[in-house]
Image 1 (cartoon, rainbow, N blue to C red):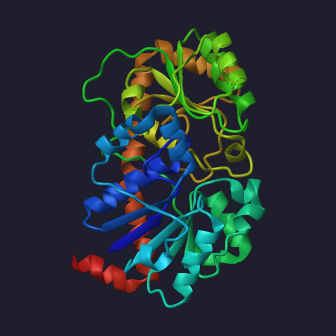
Image 2 (tube, rainbow, N blue to C red):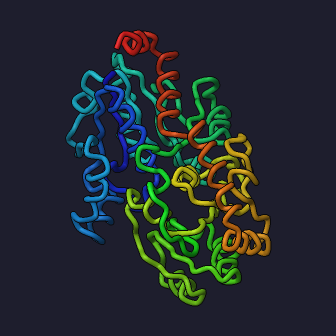
Image 3 (cartoon, one colour):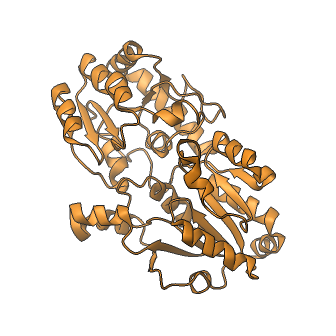
Length: 371
């Protein structure tokens, strides 16, 4: 099957978490023999920031980890017809220009035979609904939503059974426990500061408990303003800046534990949607402690795959246990790995995607069976 995906950026994961999942899914599709083409806009914001901070060297980790993947850059002069070609399946991520989204839909309406899906992996449907409703999706076959709470929003907007829950997952080809265990010290958090969506929560569930538990804290991420780095310095945390996602397994392997602090929208009005880091951390075999988060879809086994802290004091107790109890750490690692490998790999998500496409376009399914 020929698949075309329109993304904000495949090459850059600078403040672009969707690139993590996209790389894993497309890599798996390539391994199964599918013809994959990726388009990203000229001057993509994520890529521009990565190059400004790190130059071409910033792209090396991605290129080394995913040599089978490639992407092409489009300009306003490119037409959907030339970009889509003879594709069987076209997927358009929500972080694309509304005009492009509409033009691709128009190409479908004008006789395109491809299956066309919109992929939403953000909270804007609830935090800025007018921005999402501005997209012209009339000619799309359906929506891939990265959680049931988000899918429910699209159903209320009239999509009915044409919206599917398509959670993110871990790329198990690259995200694994270390082949040989080495020395692990302290706590690590890999995450971006963002737009103040969890500033209070980070102080309450990460910075203060790590200090109170006497655990050294390493922080990786971008968009940390001066007041944020000053806060880290006061807490004795070490801020390292951006880390290529391909380096995350090695970073996790150096630490005793990590923490999940959901953004406010995912802890409140979009419950049940973990970030990609939860999947990746558990796949890498690092114990995880989470701030309050409602696993409404029963993706994991809270208390078994990871620990949950209801407040800062409980987070401090959990982190102290991570520090002192090797047997507890080993038990969490084993259970977390079991769940990820059984249910939440990128390969599982590819299976789900192909099943959706087969229902929408049985002819594509027949090609799959014959391959």
